[in-house]
Image 1 (cartoon, rainbow, N blue to C red):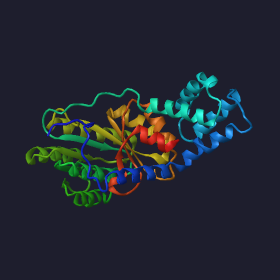
Image 2 (image 1 turned 90 degrees about the vertical axis):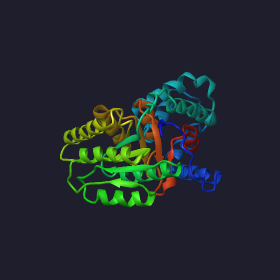
Image 3 (image 1 turned 120 degrees about the horizontal axis):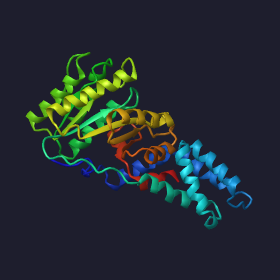
Image 4 (image 1 turned 90 degrees about the horizontal axis):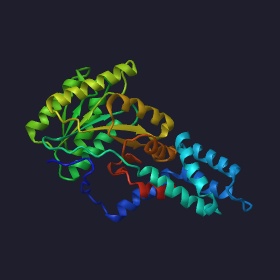
Amino acid sequence: MAFTWFQKNEEVKEGGQEKSTGFFNRLKKGLSKTRKVLSTDINDLFAGNRKIDDELLEELEELLITSDMGVRTTMDLIESISKKSSEISGADQLKKALKENILALLNSEKPCPQKITTGPLVIMVIGVNGVGKTTTIGKLAAKFVASGEKVIIAAADTFRAAAVEQLAIWAQRAGVEIVKHKDMSDPAAVAYDGIQAALARGADVVLVDTAGRLHTKKNLMEELKKIKRAISKKLPEAPHEILLVLDATTGQNALSQAELFNDALDVTGIALTKLDGTAKGGIVVSICSTLEIPLKYIGIGEKIEDLQEFDSVRFVNALL
């Protein structure tokens, strides 16, 4: 079945609107720390009928940086607010202006998705250890299955102890096949065999897991490039997507990781995990505005339905 990454798959609706509302409420709860900064603390800025001036903008700048917006994104927002300062006379108007500007940053022009003409959709999933790569793959597999796709997982993280076993458990939960080799096998060979199996069995989607840590960053990047070449050797158009999984709780470090992986592999999409309480939500805005890479998924918990396609409007409404 040929489709693009952005094609909306029908999800299994457990309670329909109630399920969607439940996710929004959990997202809102997960963003509570940032929400306090961008709501209560902004209200405090206008105590005593203050007007927007350089001093107030400086205090706002500090609040935005504290919420993990990043310096560059914060500067862009402050510049926009400064231009509208004559129209802003209170906290509600400032929050409305911030909402509009943040939404514009989140919805900035993104590269067009690659169209798939032959064979399965191949998604190579990358990221450092501990960000939730295995869990994300399991949840994605379940989502594709729920929308009627046949999925194969290629367990190409052969270096981390128990990585294959953990992935096998998720594959079983999702009801999908897994292609695996012995520990310390050549990861590129596993990926190649995964594509071969998908072509032979008529699979619609292949999710390729990869290592998140080797001896040095250079070795890791070279290993990932080798996997990418092996996939392309078997299916010239693939991988169609290179999905980078990032941990929201690492803040600006997540942005540094994204830049590192993108330089080496041309990342096409990001899944941001662990937006469930300890993270500062500004990192989402920072990633979207700084990198020309679409944020495709956000995760707020361990359940399959806790990984959702990123909705910028819903996110901003939860943030402010």
